Image (cartoon, rainbow, N blue to C red; front, top):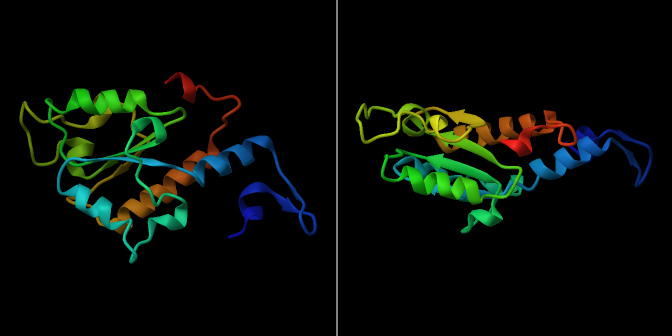
Amino acid sequence: MGLETYLGDNFGDGFIITSLEKAVNWSRKSSLWPCAFGLACCALEMIDTVLSPYDLSRFGMEVFRPSPRQADLMIVAGTVTKKMLPAVIRIYEQMAEPKWVIAMGACACSGGIFRSYAVVQGIDQYIPVDMYIPGCPPRPEALIEGILKLHDQIMQERPLHSKKLER
């Protein structure tokens, strides 16, 4: 799929007509910088997506950022405990705007098999989640499919009119 597919009509060599919103959304989706927050077994599956069989670099996401100030996508992979929750929230708050969150795995989505006072029963109770990837643990293909669906969601946003920045 070429650039015209996302941006608009192609009028000969070197000319593409599009709206500012489509161009902004295309640039946002094409340069998501993930801040990995691997907490359990799901983190291993998340790491697998960067390896050559899955090649996450196809989507411009080959480098997981070590600092939340350099990232705009948080992938919460695994079991979040109440003790770890303040760190997750702090990292989310330090991320650059606009920011997106993927909850990866049954534990991040709903607490998984851990029905305990010490385990958060869904990270969406504390930070807004844009995409859920269920499974225990979800395969790398599921993460890639979730990322592609997040790309579609980003392309539908209206950044010039959105309240997304006021989250």
